[in-house]
Image (cartoon, rainbow, N blue to C red; front, side, top):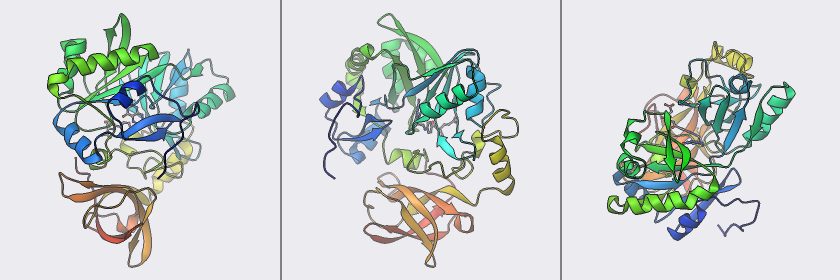
Length: 367
Ligand code: THG
């Protein structure tokens, strides 16, 4: 593919200067912002992520802030996950659905206070939907995109790196919880979360002016830990079964089709806009679902389009993300498979742009 032309519509991040100095070699566009995808090579980045520690510019995970007395009510209107027991200091992975039960986004909800939430969004224009709901229902809440840019620290040495910059208290942060820490006299939320299964944190950097000072401090502190700039890794996230909105699912899919039923409490999520629709589809159960799919043969080409899945020449689904896994010595992939063919061990054919391959359906992901 040719290069993408930079312009004001394609936003840089507070860390872009650091990302460029670190030798980024490819970007994608996410929420109209730059998201690095490769530094050395996807395979070399993968090895380093699993063995050391990386700093990821994930500023493109923009925040939709809800502020005011109706913030909690609005948040519950957006998701079928029951939020009544969620406390300030917690993060929840929440499917967001429309009135048909279709997925609009799969963000992390961050509860800062009863009347203040951040929705850390995947790649879709959720701000517009949320503003529309808030205004349409005349809710007493302010909805906007604050100057907050997540910086992820991921990999087995994440605790050691962050403890050097923020103190040993970071080691006490529990999974999907956050606590407040100071940097240059300013308060930052740091959560134990992130788009990998290698462990780590996400720093919600509030104020673009802190971006490069924090970036530089992390690299100085982590020199002997072999810290590097990294990014969500296309191999590791497939091994882990971490879904990519717009790739692995769209607004045509329900959370149940996406395997996100464990994040839905549709019976008790009173107020959720998609509740009635989801109660109807949940009664029948989904007729297709996300699966891990191992693809035979050597390294597959880039999965830049949906690859049809066939059984006996009939279409039974599609693969939407795929990569060669050095650790598992197979091509790992994520697909949506019809009920008739979604059981463990089912053999299928997948049509890549370079031809047909045999593949095996799995009921569990690799990590
Ligand atoms: N962190 C933050 N914002 C984000 C992402 C993130 N916004 C965009 C995108 N990633 C949203 N998608 C996901 C997908 C998976 C997870 C988080 C965000 C995730 N899932 C774990 C899992 O499925 O194993 C844990 C879920 C749980 O147990 O609650 O972490 O990464 N800030």
